[in-house]
Image 1 (cartoon, rainbow, N blue to C red):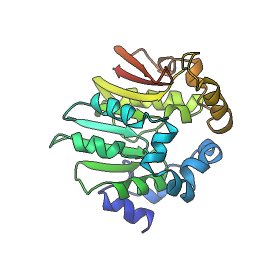
Image 2: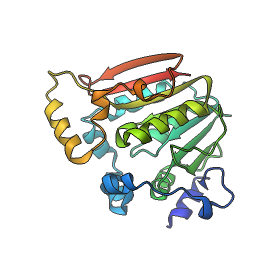
Image 3: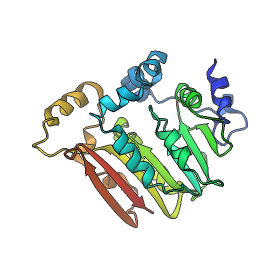
Image 4: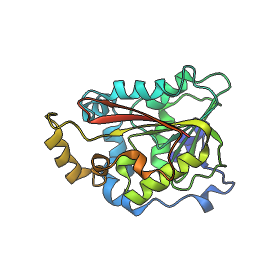
Length: 245
């Protein structure tokens, strides 16, 4: 099955806001191809990492806890329009769909067609769900067009300038009073036995992740949100933020 066929099977649109997706499809950033070809870009990456048990292992058994915490903050049921920025290995998106209200809408954007195709294969056909090829730093949607935005383990994969632009776009497209739910890495307590291991992992495989140990996520925002709710997990190694615009 080709990537286009896979995307179509989930009632998805190849490029956000475009009538000619081939001409206007966003370019894959060079940092992504250079730093994360092994995890997201190469077909072998998808075949390797699209396993729930492996995703859970990478997160030291915390995948379900972090997934469920993020989904819970979207509401039960999930109402209005929700934007998920970047596809995610595992069953996060299926869990969100399972909570969607009858009239709700979920849009998932990713810059990589291979990731959109992979996600499409995992999802049932649902008119409330669309998969869109779009750059997280230049979302093709109007201001204040979503009730909530979800960023699940995305920011640590982005260089600082890209991270800032992604958060600025999330703030732009969420309505006043809407939520941005973020799950990502966080500086662990010094007693955490994984402190040295994760520094080594970041140095080898995650070149931008150490930023989230050195700075709070809110430092990358273009403006202060109306409120910030923060919770850490697993000895501080992970964090969940709920920002209200």
